[in-house]
Image (cartoon, rainbow, N blue to C red):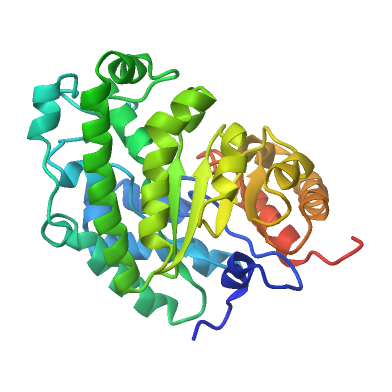
Length: 343
């Protein structure tokens, strides 16, 4: 049994004394101990070496009173396993020498045996669970099929992913085949994570907000929902779509245990769109962690009061930024841990 199961209680919709808290990218570049390992090992070496990935996962847990750990990894390990050779370029980010732009390329993409290609992730889970010693739950994650397609077709990060969108609209058959292959691989990958002992999984749809509501249904949500349908009998599934507030009503009808929201929607509107029945996670603007610790505490208290303490997981509305002072991250976490009704 996990000793601190506050996060799981929130996912189950149970009454809690205070909301649980964790931060997207909590094992990240704002921590000096993370930087020390980054300076020694390149990005994918850290992802693909179980000892390093597990160490990085628990770094923030040693520092802060967090209610969940999230396995250090990257959404691009899935396309890498499919034979799509992503690199991480310094000062550029994800990079693909030969982006996928044709049906022929899509047909050549493999749906791999995840044990053969992603075994290092499962080994990292085993090592991390030993280090966590049943203190708090471990979250596993994957990118949404649409978000992964964006990188595969664009070949790099983008502000608008115009090439990826054009590919979907000009070659929908190829786009849907690629999305289905990514979905099938992701389902197998996440099922294995659950078997290895993660307590919940989160699907990150970082670029879902690039699509119109109609296109979102066609190119993103239907594939995310396949993942939710496949995984929800086995574990809790959290879906986070950045900029996807327009899809919250449809997401609420799914079997997801919780939905992540970003800072562009008010807590009240998010509750209305989800019919006051869904656990919500979010939605502090990561850039707001540049405010003073006193301001952060005040804003976090207000955020909790507006969402309500039950069916709620305090988090950021996207990943923590690299240049956030450690003491400000701590102020965010402690504001949740110290929250009391009528604050």
